[in-house]
Image 1 (cartoon, rainbow, N blue to C red):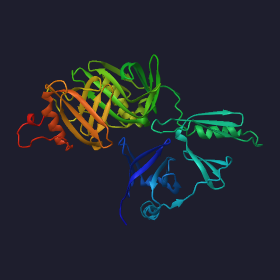
Image 2: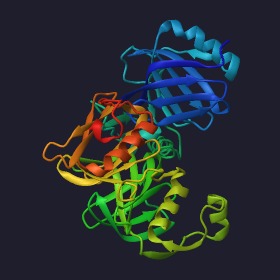
Image 3: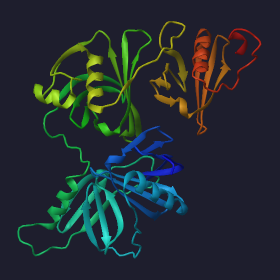
Image 4: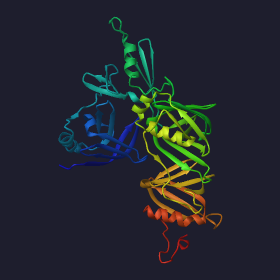
Length: 440
């Protein structure tokens, strides 16, 4: 038997949205890579507790439960792939891949069972529907009634807003069934409450998107942005990537937090949180924890008392809490010696940073493009003057980004960088003519 199984065009169900990607099963575990965001979910083989195969809207689906209660759902399998998957689970994970059908009777009364982070509404032994409790944003009770509200996913065409359960009164003394139901939900729900004290607070930080000055309170599981008009609570689980980028003037630093799902302000979505720091600004920071707690939780990455540049302190605290690497510019150096290129995107002027695995543009609107999603790049003549050129990127999804008004002197450096990264260049030009100028 093969040591790995790979499936393309598999869909992961996340809050009502079907995210396409690739699923890979190996002896070590299960890996799913999202085609759109590049986010990788890795489930260790030792963590797997149960595997369920069932018929779903997109053919057949695989539901995986882990020992700590997490649920992962993958759709898009063919019926003929069951035997192959079942044998693989037995051989490498020592698990029986159970076949379970959903109940389609259409009844609206049944039994609610709580298991791990899942609420299952069953009729007899068959589930009618399941609700991952981590999707619950609020749980309220009324007389014989429990209402669940859900976190919304912007990528979903149709979103489930709330579900109400009628809980009939029982004769048991001392136990309120409605309250017991609500407590079961709240114990696993992702309800963000600012309980307890913040680990630390950064005052009046300059934020470029969303614009304004915000106090940032750092809590163990989320960060709280508090401004004059808006308030945001951002769970660390929604942080995709962290970037620390030096400004071209060498006096300022951008700290960029990539979010999925984004934060909302009315109808506006912010996929990136961008903070701007002056390099000269220093801070002394004391964490609101005792030294034993700091050592136990952060294992030397943070200390109770720290001092240094403000941008270093913010990035260090964020890195320790979010547990993600901070991406910094690679070895690219532009004509002026800076690690970025001045250009325009849409109507605004900004900075394009060539990174080790992608490009990021700040700041309005912020754009992050990974190399693995780029189909080709194109160097085009400037539309208004010959002293500048345009740099175009087209992704495999067909989206085109045009960074215009780049100084001609940057051409050689950018061309060499793109070449070294083995990206497809659409207009490679006359190869027999030496130098870069002939290609433009």
